[in-house]
Structures are given as structure tokens and as C-alpha cells.
Amino acid sequence: ELDVVEMYGQSPNSLLMTAHTNETGTHTKVGSTVNVSDTDGFHTYGLLWTPDKLVWTYDGVQVAEAATPSDMNKPMYMLVDLAIGGQAGAPPDHLATPAQMKIDYIHAYTLDYLQQSHLNVTGEHAV
Image: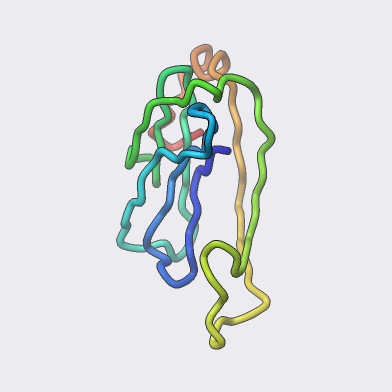
């Protein structure tokens, strides 16, 4: 599992960017928690996934990097999810529900396409 971004409602300015792997035989995680000044409004969240490294971006700026786990060498499904509770804990009583997540667009590119089109993955067209 590659998390381009995860956020917990009680910490809206903390971005969790994580790769979950079983390469060691048990569940392990690599990644970072990145604190940003503001997550209100629309932002771009990106992940460049190469055979050697994972590079996470926020608004076109690299904010985290990790070595690609050895078991992440095949295609994966893309999932967009708004979860409440679970691992992050029960939502506080004052949480406005139903919750909303607004998405303007989602782009996905292959590495071949990126190389052929010369897209700047840390710029306007982040992956």
C-alpha cells in the first residue's frame, strides 16, 4: 500500500506519506509525517514511484523521500478514501458529519509517459 497522503481530522496540517510493506516478512512502514502551514482549499499531493525511490510532493514541492521497498514492483489499484474513526480513533462528538472530501482531479502516469512527455513531477503536473 502506498499512501500518497493521509490526514487525521484532529491534525489537519499533518500529512502522513507512507509505504506499507511486507518485504521483511511482517508489516513495516517507511515514510514521513510532514507538517504544512495550511491544508484548507485545494492542493496537489503527488507521489513519484520509481524502482529505486518514492518521492512525495505537496503543491509541487518535494516534502518526503524513501527507498522503494523491494516488494513494490508490480501494479497496484488506486483508491480514494474518506475514513472516520478506525486507526485514527473515534471522531470527537463535535465533528461535523457527514464529512466531505472534495477532489478537483486525479492524474496517474506511467514512468514511460513521464519520460516521453518531459512532465515535471515536482511542478504543476505532479504525479
